[in-house]
Length: 322
Length: 198
Image (cartoon, rainbow over all chains, first blue to last red; front, side, top):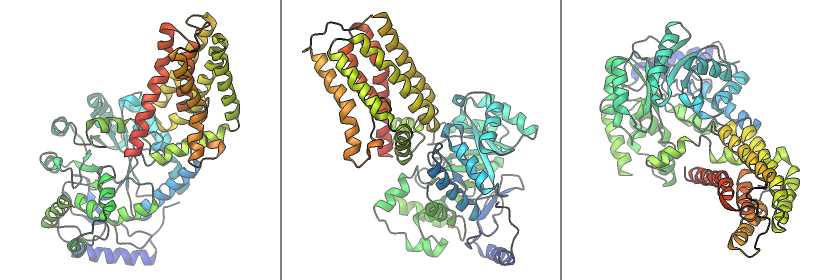
Protein backbone atom coordinates (compact mmCIF):
# COMPACT_ATOMS: atom_id res chain seq x y z
CA UNK A 1 0.00 0.00 0.00
CA UNK A 2 1.22 3.46 -0.77
CA UNK A 3 -0.63 5.22 2.05
CA UNK A 4 2.21 6.15 4.35
CA UNK A 5 2.68 8.46 7.28
CA UNK A 6 5.35 11.12 7.04
CA UNK A 7 8.51 10.00 8.70
CA UNK A 8 10.67 12.47 10.65
CA UNK A 9 13.04 12.67 7.69
CA UNK A 10 10.16 13.40 5.32
CA UNK A 11 8.76 15.99 7.71
CA UNK A 12 12.10 17.76 7.68
CA UNK A 13 12.12 17.65 3.89
CA UNK A 14 8.64 19.14 3.85
CA UNK A 15 9.79 21.90 6.14
CA UNK A 16 12.73 22.49 3.83
CA UNK A 17 10.40 22.54 0.86
CA UNK A 18 8.25 25.18 2.52
CA UNK A 19 11.33 27.33 3.00
CA UNK A 20 12.35 26.69 -0.60
CA UNK A 21 8.90 27.75 -1.76
CA UNK A 22 9.57 31.20 -0.47
CA UNK A 23 12.70 31.36 -2.61
CA UNK A 24 10.99 30.36 -5.85
CA UNK A 25 10.42 33.04 -8.46
CA UNK A 26 6.91 34.39 -8.11
CA UNK A 27 4.76 33.39 -11.06
CA UNK A 28 1.21 34.51 -11.81
CA UNK A 29 -0.43 31.08 -11.41
CA UNK A 30 -4.19 30.74 -11.21
CA UNK A 31 -3.64 29.92 -7.61
CA UNK A 32 -0.34 30.37 -5.85
CA UNK A 33 1.80 27.30 -6.44
CA UNK A 34 2.37 25.12 -3.45
CA UNK A 35 4.74 22.27 -2.90
CA UNK A 36 3.58 18.71 -2.80
CA UNK A 37 4.78 16.21 -0.24
CA UNK A 38 8.39 15.38 -0.77
CA UNK A 39 8.90 12.29 -2.83
CA UNK A 40 10.06 9.09 -1.23
CA UNK A 41 13.08 9.13 -3.49
CA UNK A 42 14.34 12.26 -1.84
CA UNK A 43 13.95 14.56 -4.85
CA UNK A 44 12.68 18.12 -4.49
CA UNK A 45 8.96 18.31 -3.83
CA UNK A 46 6.59 18.62 -6.76
CA UNK A 47 4.89 21.94 -7.39
CA UNK A 48 1.11 21.97 -7.18
CA UNK A 49 -1.44 24.36 -8.58
CA UNK A 50 -4.97 25.13 -7.55
CA UNK A 51 -7.79 23.70 -9.60
CA UNK A 52 -9.30 26.84 -11.04
CA UNK A 53 -11.38 28.43 -8.32
CA UNK A 54 -11.33 25.39 -6.07
CA UNK A 55 -9.15 24.89 -3.03
CA UNK A 56 -7.92 21.51 -4.26
CA UNK A 57 -4.40 21.41 -5.65
CA UNK A 58 -2.85 19.18 -8.25
CA UNK A 59 0.81 18.30 -8.93
CA UNK A 60 1.93 20.00 -12.13
CA UNK A 61 3.22 16.80 -13.74
CA UNK A 62 0.55 14.19 -14.42
CA UNK A 63 0.66 11.02 -16.47
CA UNK A 64 -0.88 10.21 -19.84
CA UNK A 65 -1.64 6.65 -20.93
CA UNK A 66 -2.31 6.98 -24.70
CA UNK A 67 -0.47 4.15 -26.44
CA UNK A 68 1.99 3.62 -23.59
CA UNK A 69 -0.41 1.79 -21.27
CA UNK A 70 -2.29 -0.22 -23.88
CA UNK A 71 -0.54 -3.55 -23.33
CA UNK A 72 -3.51 -5.93 -23.16
CA UNK A 73 -3.13 -8.88 -20.81
CA UNK A 74 0.60 -9.33 -21.38
CA UNK A 75 1.90 -10.19 -17.88
CA UNK A 76 5.42 -8.95 -18.58
CA UNK A 77 4.24 -5.57 -19.83
CA UNK A 78 1.57 -5.27 -17.11
CA UNK A 79 4.27 -5.55 -14.46
CA UNK A 80 6.54 -3.16 -16.36
CA UNK A 81 3.79 -0.50 -16.50
CA UNK A 82 3.06 -1.07 -12.81
CA UNK A 83 6.64 -0.05 -12.08
CA UNK A 84 6.11 3.13 -14.12
CA UNK A 85 3.00 3.94 -12.05
CA UNK A 86 4.93 3.21 -8.87
CA UNK A 87 7.66 5.64 -9.88
CA UNK A 88 5.02 8.24 -10.75
CA UNK A 89 3.48 8.17 -7.28
CA UNK A 90 6.82 7.88 -5.51
CA UNK A 91 7.76 11.18 -7.12
CA UNK A 92 4.61 12.92 -5.96
CA UNK A 93 2.42 12.31 -9.02
CA UNK A 94 -1.32 12.93 -8.96
CA UNK A 95 -3.36 13.07 -12.16
CA UNK A 96 -3.51 9.98 -14.37
CA UNK A 97 -5.42 10.47 -17.60
CA UNK A 98 -6.97 7.67 -19.64
CA UNK A 99 -9.82 7.00 -22.04
CA UNK A 100 -11.97 4.14 -23.29
CA UNK A 101 -10.36 4.91 -26.65
CA UNK A 102 -6.97 3.83 -25.31
CA UNK A 103 -7.62 0.11 -25.61
CA UNK A 104 -6.65 -1.73 -22.44
CA UNK A 105 -5.11 1.32 -20.70
CA UNK A 106 -7.94 1.59 -18.09
CA UNK A 107 -7.51 -2.12 -17.27
CA UNK A 108 -3.77 -1.68 -16.96
CA UNK A 109 -4.31 1.17 -14.51
CA UNK A 110 -6.68 -1.10 -12.58
CA UNK A 111 -3.99 -3.79 -12.49
CA UNK A 112 -1.34 -1.35 -11.29
CA UNK A 113 -3.58 0.13 -8.60
CA UNK A 114 -4.46 -3.34 -7.36
CA UNK A 115 -0.79 -4.20 -7.12
CA UNK A 116 0.33 -0.93 -5.54
CA UNK A 117 -2.72 0.12 -3.58
CA UNK A 118 -4.54 3.34 -4.30
CA UNK A 119 -2.31 6.24 -3.24
CA UNK A 120 -3.83 9.26 -1.56
CA UNK A 121 -2.47 11.51 -4.26
CA UNK A 122 -4.26 9.71 -7.12
CA UNK A 123 -6.40 12.07 -9.18
CA UNK A 124 -8.13 9.71 -11.60
CA UNK A 125 -9.15 11.28 -14.90
CA UNK A 126 -11.21 9.40 -17.46
CA UNK A 127 -13.27 10.22 -20.51
CA UNK A 128 -16.51 9.31 -22.21
CA UNK A 129 -16.45 8.70 -25.93
CA UNK A 130 -19.39 7.80 -28.17
CA UNK A 131 -17.74 4.99 -30.18
CA UNK A 132 -17.03 3.23 -26.86
CA UNK A 133 -20.77 2.51 -26.74
CA UNK A 134 -23.34 3.08 -24.03
CA UNK A 135 -24.43 6.24 -22.29
CA UNK A 136 -22.06 8.44 -20.31
CA UNK A 137 -23.34 6.83 -17.11
CA UNK A 138 -22.80 3.33 -18.43
CA UNK A 139 -19.32 4.18 -19.64
CA UNK A 140 -18.31 5.73 -16.33
CA UNK A 141 -19.64 2.68 -14.46
CA UNK A 142 -17.70 0.31 -16.72
CA UNK A 143 -14.52 2.39 -16.48
CA UNK A 144 -14.73 2.44 -12.68
CA UNK A 145 -14.77 -1.35 -12.76
CA UNK A 146 -11.79 -1.40 -15.09
CA UNK A 147 -9.78 0.99 -12.90
CA UNK A 148 -11.16 -0.70 -9.78
CA UNK A 149 -11.84 2.65 -8.16
CA UNK A 150 -14.99 3.81 -6.43
CA UNK A 151 -15.21 7.21 -8.04
CA UNK A 152 -13.37 9.26 -10.65
CA UNK A 153 -11.97 12.64 -9.70
CA UNK A 154 -12.52 13.88 -13.23
CA UNK A 155 -14.50 12.72 -16.24
CA UNK A 156 -14.05 14.51 -19.54
CA UNK A 157 -15.82 14.39 -22.89
CA UNK A 158 -13.26 12.90 -25.27
CA UNK A 159 -12.46 15.11 -28.26
CA UNK A 160 -15.80 16.95 -28.05
CA UNK A 161 -17.63 13.81 -29.20
CA UNK A 162 -21.39 14.34 -28.80
CA UNK A 163 -20.45 16.84 -26.13
CA UNK A 164 -23.95 18.23 -25.55
CA UNK A 165 -25.39 14.86 -24.51
CA UNK A 166 -22.32 13.70 -22.62
CA UNK A 167 -21.72 16.99 -20.82
CA UNK A 168 -25.36 17.18 -19.67
CA UNK A 169 -25.06 13.67 -18.24
CA UNK A 170 -21.73 14.42 -16.56
CA UNK A 171 -23.08 17.64 -15.04
CA UNK A 172 -25.95 15.65 -13.56
CA UNK A 173 -23.59 12.99 -12.21
CA UNK A 174 -21.41 15.67 -10.66
CA UNK A 175 -24.46 17.23 -9.01
CA UNK A 176 -25.29 13.79 -7.60
CA UNK A 177 -21.76 13.54 -6.21
CA UNK A 178 -20.86 10.58 -8.40
CA UNK A 179 -17.74 12.24 -9.76
CA UNK A 180 -15.51 15.09 -8.71
CA UNK A 181 -14.99 17.35 -11.70
CA UNK A 182 -16.05 17.45 -15.32
CA UNK A 183 -14.29 18.63 -18.43
CA UNK A 184 -13.85 18.38 -22.16
CA UNK A 185 -10.84 17.52 -24.29
CA UNK A 186 -9.34 18.17 -27.66
CA UNK A 187 -5.88 17.66 -29.14
CA UNK A 188 -3.69 18.64 -32.06
CA UNK A 189 -5.18 22.13 -32.06
CA UNK A 190 -8.49 20.93 -33.43
CA UNK A 191 -11.90 22.62 -32.90
CA UNK A 192 -10.55 25.41 -30.71
CA UNK A 193 -13.35 27.76 -31.71
CA UNK A 194 -15.98 25.26 -30.60
CA UNK A 195 -14.08 24.59 -27.39
CA UNK A 196 -14.03 28.31 -26.69
CA UNK A 197 -17.80 28.47 -27.10
CA UNK A 198 -18.23 25.56 -24.70
CA UNK A 199 -15.91 27.19 -22.14
CA UNK A 200 -17.94 30.37 -22.38
CA UNK A 201 -21.41 28.85 -22.24
CA UNK A 202 -21.03 25.70 -20.14
CA UNK A 203 -20.18 25.10 -16.53
CA UNK A 204 -17.03 22.96 -16.73
CA UNK A 205 -14.05 22.54 -14.40
CA UNK A 206 -11.36 21.31 -16.79
CA UNK A 207 -10.29 21.53 -20.37
CA UNK A 208 -7.58 19.39 -21.93
CA UNK A 209 -5.77 20.52 -25.05
CA UNK A 210 -2.47 20.26 -26.85
CA UNK A 211 0.05 22.77 -25.57
CA UNK A 212 3.80 22.49 -25.95
CA UNK A 213 6.70 24.70 -26.93
CA UNK A 214 6.05 24.16 -30.65
CA UNK A 215 2.24 24.23 -30.51
CA UNK A 216 1.14 27.33 -28.65
CA UNK A 217 -2.12 28.20 -30.45
CA UNK A 218 -3.98 27.92 -27.17
CA UNK A 219 -2.12 30.96 -25.83
CA UNK A 220 -4.16 33.23 -28.07
CA UNK A 221 -7.65 32.76 -26.66
CA UNK A 222 -8.20 29.52 -24.78
CA UNK A 223 -5.64 29.87 -22.01
CA UNK A 224 -6.61 33.47 -21.14
CA UNK A 225 -10.26 32.41 -21.16
CA UNK A 226 -9.50 29.49 -18.87
CA UNK A 227 -7.79 31.85 -16.43
CA UNK A 228 -10.70 34.27 -16.57
CA UNK A 229 -13.27 31.50 -15.99
CA UNK A 230 -11.21 29.61 -13.41
CA UNK A 231 -11.06 26.49 -15.57
CA UNK A 232 -8.16 24.13 -14.93
CA UNK A 233 -6.10 23.18 -17.99
CA UNK A 234 -4.42 19.85 -18.74
CA UNK A 235 -1.75 20.05 -21.43
CA UNK A 236 -1.57 16.91 -23.57
CA UNK A 237 1.15 15.98 -26.06
CA UNK A 238 3.84 17.88 -24.11
CA UNK A 239 6.54 16.29 -26.27
CA UNK A 240 4.37 16.45 -29.40
CA UNK A 241 3.71 12.74 -29.29
CA UNK A 242 7.38 12.04 -28.52
CA UNK A 243 8.66 13.40 -31.82
CA UNK A 244 9.79 16.71 -30.31
CA UNK A 245 12.05 15.32 -27.60
CA UNK A 246 13.22 12.36 -29.68
CA UNK A 247 14.20 14.72 -32.50
CA UNK A 248 16.17 16.97 -30.16
CA UNK A 249 17.91 14.05 -28.50
CA UNK A 250 18.63 12.29 -31.80
CA UNK A 251 20.39 15.38 -33.08
CA UNK A 252 22.38 15.58 -29.85
CA UNK A 253 21.33 19.15 -29.19
CA UNK A 254 23.02 20.68 -26.17
CA UNK A 255 20.80 21.92 -23.36
CA UNK A 256 21.24 25.72 -23.02
CA UNK A 257 23.43 26.63 -20.05
CA UNK A 258 21.21 29.55 -19.08
CA UNK A 259 18.29 27.14 -18.57
CA UNK A 260 20.37 25.15 -16.11
CA UNK A 261 21.19 28.32 -14.21
CA UNK A 262 17.75 29.94 -14.28
CA UNK A 263 15.45 27.01 -13.62
CA UNK A 264 17.65 24.02 -12.93
CA UNK A 265 16.97 22.22 -16.18
CA UNK A 266 19.20 19.18 -16.39
CA UNK A 267 17.49 17.38 -19.26
CA UNK A 268 15.45 18.31 -22.32
CA UNK A 269 12.43 16.76 -20.62
CA UNK A 270 12.95 19.29 -17.83
CA UNK A 271 13.24 22.11 -20.33
CA UNK A 272 10.13 21.21 -22.34
CA UNK A 273 7.92 20.38 -19.36
CA UNK A 274 8.96 23.40 -17.29
CA UNK A 275 8.05 25.56 -20.26
CA UNK A 276 4.53 24.13 -20.23
CA UNK A 277 3.77 24.08 -16.53
CA UNK A 278 5.19 27.55 -15.96
CA UNK A 279 2.41 29.03 -18.06
CA UNK A 280 0.06 30.60 -15.54
CA UNK A 281 -3.05 29.02 -17.04
CA UNK A 282 -1.72 25.46 -17.27
CA UNK A 283 -2.60 23.28 -14.30
CA UNK A 284 -0.63 20.20 -15.30
CA UNK A 285 1.05 18.45 -18.21
CA UNK A 286 0.55 14.76 -18.90
CA UNK A 287 3.62 13.20 -20.52
CA UNK A 288 3.32 9.49 -21.26
CA UNK A 289 6.10 6.97 -21.06
CA UNK A 290 6.76 3.25 -20.86
CA UNK A 291 10.01 3.58 -18.93
CA UNK A 292 10.68 4.17 -15.26
CA UNK A 293 13.79 6.22 -16.04
CA UNK A 294 11.82 8.56 -18.29
CA UNK A 295 9.09 8.82 -15.68
CA UNK A 296 11.65 9.93 -13.09
CA UNK A 297 13.04 12.43 -15.56
CA UNK A 298 9.56 13.80 -16.28
CA UNK A 299 8.66 14.07 -12.63
CA UNK A 300 11.83 16.01 -11.92
CA UNK A 301 10.53 18.80 -14.13
CA UNK A 302 7.75 19.52 -11.66
CA UNK A 303 10.09 20.60 -8.91
CA UNK A 304 12.58 23.38 -8.33
CA UNK A 305 12.64 26.78 -9.98
CA UNK A 306 10.47 27.56 -12.96
CA UNK A 307 11.38 29.81 -15.89
CA UNK A 308 10.39 33.46 -15.69
CA UNK A 309 8.29 35.12 -18.40
CA UNK A 310 11.45 36.27 -20.19
CA UNK A 311 12.95 32.82 -19.71
CA UNK A 312 9.92 31.28 -21.40
CA UNK A 313 10.40 33.54 -24.40
CA UNK A 314 14.04 32.59 -24.54
CA UNK A 315 13.07 28.92 -24.44
CA UNK A 316 10.82 29.43 -27.46
CA UNK A 317 13.59 31.16 -29.37
CA UNK A 318 16.09 28.44 -28.48
CA UNK A 319 13.83 25.63 -29.65
CA UNK A 320 12.86 27.52 -32.82
CA UNK A 321 16.56 27.90 -33.60
CA UNK A 322 17.34 24.17 -33.27
CA UNK B 1 4.00 11.48 -39.25
CA UNK B 2 2.70 14.96 -39.44
CA UNK B 3 -0.42 16.44 -40.90
CA UNK B 4 -4.08 15.51 -40.76
CA UNK B 5 -3.93 12.16 -42.54
CA UNK B 6 -1.13 10.92 -40.30
CA UNK B 7 -3.03 11.99 -37.21
CA UNK B 8 -6.25 10.39 -38.39
CA UNK B 9 -4.41 7.10 -38.85
CA UNK B 10 -2.63 7.34 -35.49
CA UNK B 11 -5.95 7.85 -33.77
CA UNK B 12 -7.05 4.37 -34.81
CA UNK B 13 -3.82 2.65 -33.79
CA UNK B 14 -3.69 3.01 -30.01
CA UNK B 15 -0.71 0.73 -29.44
CA UNK B 16 3.01 0.98 -29.98
CA UNK B 17 5.31 -0.99 -32.25
CA UNK B 18 6.85 -2.93 -29.36
CA UNK B 19 3.49 -3.87 -27.87
CA UNK B 20 2.21 -5.10 -31.25
CA UNK B 21 5.31 -7.26 -31.69
CA UNK B 22 4.78 -8.68 -28.19
CA UNK B 23 1.16 -9.44 -29.07
CA UNK B 24 2.23 -11.35 -32.19
CA UNK B 25 4.83 -13.21 -30.14
CA UNK B 26 2.29 -14.13 -27.47
CA UNK B 27 -0.19 -15.36 -30.08
CA UNK B 28 2.56 -17.60 -31.46
CA UNK B 29 3.34 -18.96 -28.00
CA UNK B 30 -0.33 -19.50 -27.18
CA UNK B 31 -1.22 -21.55 -30.25
CA UNK B 32 1.99 -23.46 -30.86
CA UNK B 33 2.12 -26.20 -32.26
CA UNK B 34 -1.16 -25.58 -34.14
CA UNK B 35 0.95 -23.59 -36.63
CA UNK B 36 2.01 -26.87 -38.23
CA UNK B 37 -1.57 -28.05 -38.66
CA UNK B 38 -2.83 -24.78 -40.15
CA UNK B 39 0.16 -24.56 -42.47
CA UNK B 40 -0.43 -28.11 -43.70
CA UNK B 41 -4.11 -27.31 -44.20
CA UNK B 42 -3.10 -24.29 -46.28
CA UNK B 43 -0.82 -26.44 -48.43
CA UNK B 44 -3.67 -28.95 -48.82
CA UNK B 45 -6.05 -26.20 -49.95
CA UNK B 46 -3.48 -25.09 -52.53
CA UNK B 47 -3.10 -28.65 -53.83
CA UNK B 48 -6.87 -29.07 -54.03
CA UNK B 49 -7.17 -25.76 -55.85
CA UNK B 50 -4.53 -26.75 -58.40
CA UNK B 51 -6.31 -30.09 -58.92
CA UNK B 52 -9.58 -28.28 -59.65
CA UNK B 53 -11.27 -29.48 -56.48
CA UNK B 54 -12.52 -26.02 -55.65
CA UNK B 55 -15.43 -27.10 -53.49
CA UNK B 56 -13.22 -29.03 -51.08
CA UNK B 57 -10.62 -26.25 -51.13
CA UNK B 58 -13.17 -23.59 -50.27
CA UNK B 59 -14.65 -25.84 -47.58
CA UNK B 60 -11.25 -26.23 -45.90
CA UNK B 61 -10.37 -22.55 -46.20
CA UNK B 62 -13.52 -21.37 -44.37
CA UNK B 63 -12.69 -22.68 -40.86
CA UNK B 64 -9.23 -21.13 -41.00
CA UNK B 65 -10.82 -17.69 -41.35
CA UNK B 66 -13.04 -18.51 -38.40
CA UNK B 67 -9.96 -19.46 -36.38
CA UNK B 68 -8.12 -16.24 -37.24
CA UNK B 69 -11.25 -14.16 -36.56
CA UNK B 70 -11.69 -15.64 -33.10
CA UNK B 71 -8.15 -16.55 -32.02
CA UNK B 72 -6.25 -13.61 -33.49
CA UNK B 73 -8.75 -10.76 -33.41
CA UNK B 74 -11.42 -11.39 -30.79
CA UNK B 75 -9.14 -13.03 -28.24
CA UNK B 76 -5.99 -10.96 -28.67
CA UNK B 77 -5.99 -8.00 -31.06
CA UNK B 78 -9.23 -6.60 -29.60
CA UNK B 79 -7.44 -6.16 -26.26
CA UNK B 80 -5.38 -3.43 -27.86
CA UNK B 81 -7.78 -1.92 -30.35
CA UNK B 82 -11.52 -1.41 -29.93
CA UNK B 83 -11.86 -1.93 -33.71
CA UNK B 84 -10.48 -5.47 -33.29
CA UNK B 85 -13.91 -6.89 -32.50
CA UNK B 86 -15.34 -5.55 -35.74
CA UNK B 87 -12.41 -6.90 -37.75
CA UNK B 88 -12.84 -10.26 -36.03
CA UNK B 89 -16.50 -10.35 -37.03
CA UNK B 90 -15.48 -9.46 -40.60
CA UNK B 91 -13.14 -12.46 -40.66
CA UNK B 92 -15.94 -14.68 -39.36
CA UNK B 93 -18.20 -13.29 -42.10
CA UNK B 94 -15.55 -14.26 -44.66
CA UNK B 95 -15.57 -17.79 -43.23
CA UNK B 96 -19.36 -17.93 -43.63
CA UNK B 97 -19.08 -16.63 -47.19
CA UNK B 98 -16.48 -19.25 -48.15
CA UNK B 99 -18.57 -21.98 -46.56
CA UNK B 100 -21.67 -20.73 -48.41
CA UNK B 101 -19.78 -20.80 -51.71
CA UNK B 102 -18.57 -24.34 -51.03
CA UNK B 103 -22.04 -25.57 -50.10
CA UNK B 104 -23.86 -23.84 -52.95
CA UNK B 105 -21.25 -24.69 -55.57
CA UNK B 106 -21.65 -21.25 -57.14
CA UNK B 107 -18.60 -19.38 -58.42
CA UNK B 108 -16.30 -22.39 -58.13
CA UNK B 109 -13.60 -22.89 -60.76
CA UNK B 110 -13.95 -26.62 -61.35
CA UNK B 111 -12.44 -26.53 -64.83
CA UNK B 112 -9.58 -24.11 -64.57
CA UNK B 113 -7.11 -23.38 -67.32
CA UNK B 114 -3.82 -24.00 -65.53
CA UNK B 115 -1.86 -21.34 -67.33
CA UNK B 116 -4.32 -18.50 -66.85
CA UNK B 117 -2.53 -15.39 -65.52
CA UNK B 118 -4.90 -15.39 -62.55
CA UNK B 119 -3.78 -18.91 -61.60
CA UNK B 120 -0.11 -17.99 -61.89
CA UNK B 121 -0.57 -14.82 -59.81
CA UNK B 122 -2.68 -16.84 -57.38
CA UNK B 123 0.04 -19.44 -57.00
CA UNK B 124 2.66 -16.77 -56.32
CA UNK B 125 0.46 -15.08 -53.71
CA UNK B 126 -0.47 -18.37 -52.07
CA UNK B 127 3.16 -19.43 -51.80
CA UNK B 128 4.09 -15.99 -50.46
CA UNK B 129 1.49 -16.29 -47.68
CA UNK B 130 2.15 -19.94 -46.93
CA UNK B 131 5.93 -20.11 -47.17
CA UNK B 132 7.43 -16.67 -47.71
CA UNK B 133 5.75 -14.87 -44.84
CA UNK B 134 6.85 -17.23 -42.04
CA UNK B 135 10.38 -17.16 -43.42
CA UNK B 136 10.56 -13.37 -43.14
CA UNK B 137 10.27 -13.80 -39.37
CA UNK B 138 12.64 -16.73 -39.26
CA UNK B 139 15.27 -14.84 -41.24
CA UNK B 140 14.98 -11.92 -38.84
CA UNK B 141 15.76 -14.16 -35.89
CA UNK B 142 12.34 -15.36 -34.72
CA UNK B 143 12.04 -18.94 -33.50
CA UNK B 144 9.72 -21.40 -35.25
CA UNK B 145 6.84 -20.84 -32.88
CA UNK B 146 7.05 -17.09 -33.45
CA UNK B 147 6.81 -17.43 -37.23
CA UNK B 148 3.73 -15.67 -38.66
CA UNK B 149 1.94 -18.66 -40.10
CA UNK B 150 -1.13 -18.97 -42.32
CA UNK B 151 -4.26 -19.86 -40.38
CA UNK B 152 -3.03 -18.32 -37.10
CA UNK B 153 -1.93 -14.81 -38.11
CA UNK B 154 -4.03 -12.40 -40.14
CA UNK B 155 -1.46 -11.11 -42.67
CA UNK B 156 -0.26 -14.41 -44.16
CA UNK B 157 -3.82 -15.75 -44.07
CA UNK B 158 -5.12 -12.79 -46.08
CA UNK B 159 -2.24 -12.90 -48.59
CA UNK B 160 -2.43 -16.66 -49.17
CA UNK B 161 -6.23 -16.55 -49.32
CA UNK B 162 -6.17 -13.92 -52.06
CA UNK B 163 -3.97 -16.24 -54.07
CA UNK B 164 -6.12 -19.27 -53.36
CA UNK B 165 -9.28 -17.38 -54.29
CA UNK B 166 -7.79 -16.49 -57.66
CA UNK B 167 -7.38 -20.21 -58.34
CA UNK B 168 -10.56 -21.45 -56.64
CA UNK B 169 -13.22 -19.00 -57.76
CA UNK B 170 -14.64 -17.23 -60.79
CA UNK B 171 -16.88 -14.23 -61.47
CA UNK B 172 -18.43 -11.85 -58.97
CA UNK B 173 -18.09 -14.25 -56.05
CA UNK B 174 -14.31 -14.11 -56.53
CA UNK B 175 -14.41 -10.32 -56.18
CA UNK B 176 -16.87 -10.44 -53.30
CA UNK B 177 -14.78 -12.90 -51.33
CA UNK B 178 -11.60 -10.89 -52.01
CA UNK B 179 -12.97 -7.71 -50.36
CA UNK B 180 -12.29 -8.61 -46.71
CA UNK B 181 -8.76 -10.01 -47.28
CA UNK B 182 -7.90 -6.93 -49.35
CA UNK B 183 -9.35 -4.52 -46.78
CA UNK B 184 -7.41 -6.21 -43.98
CA UNK B 185 -4.16 -5.98 -45.95
CA UNK B 186 -4.76 -2.24 -46.44
CA UNK B 187 -5.47 -1.81 -42.71
CA UNK B 188 -2.45 -3.91 -41.76
CA UNK B 189 -0.17 -2.07 -44.18
CA UNK B 190 -1.25 1.30 -42.81
CA UNK B 191 -0.82 0.00 -39.26
CA UNK B 192 2.75 -1.05 -39.89
CA UNK B 193 3.44 2.23 -41.66
CA UNK B 194 2.19 4.23 -38.65
CA UNK B 195 4.02 2.02 -36.14
CA UNK B 196 7.31 2.24 -37.97
CA UNK B 197 7.04 5.99 -38.52
CA UNK B 198 5.84 7.26 -35.15
